Length: 165
Image 1 (cartoon, rainbow, N blue to C red):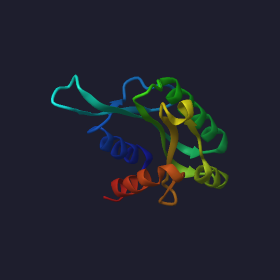
Image 2 (tube, rainbow, N blue to C red; image 1 turned 90 degrees about the vertical axis):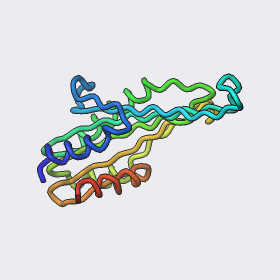
Image 3 (cartoon, helix red, strand yellow; image 1 turned 180 degrees about the vertical axis):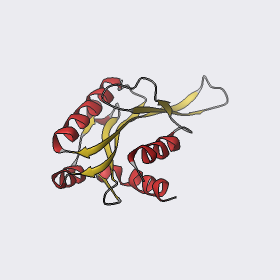
Image 4 (cartoon, rainbow, N blue to C red; image 1 turned 120 degrees about the vertical axis):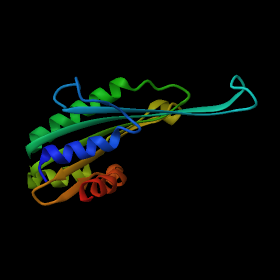
């Protein structure tokens, strides 16, 4: 499977729950997607709310022939900066995850350790206004492997199922 086909299959799985932007995503990404989830419970009428929780996820997709450490660092910084810039913490905000999905024909060996140890996390107002976390999934098509950081492990399983079917 080539990088274009793999990217199309992964992005297609996001269309159901995410607002997918393929026309004009921020540079250098090829596609971006946004999830907005609001959970509310109320008593008899919507005015008598018991609680409200907001969850967001900003997903950035990139495909390349070769993933180098320099390219990875650039993509991670850009995704994190843009995702945090879109986050607006307040008392009902629970989480804003920033997710980076990279599809590469080949991944440099020094990137593998960096990918597995990638960790960015911010607690907003000591967690009272939620948190933001970084999730990462990298598809190495030459080896047929899918790498992720700890927070991206559930997404890694999903991407594995998408590409193997």
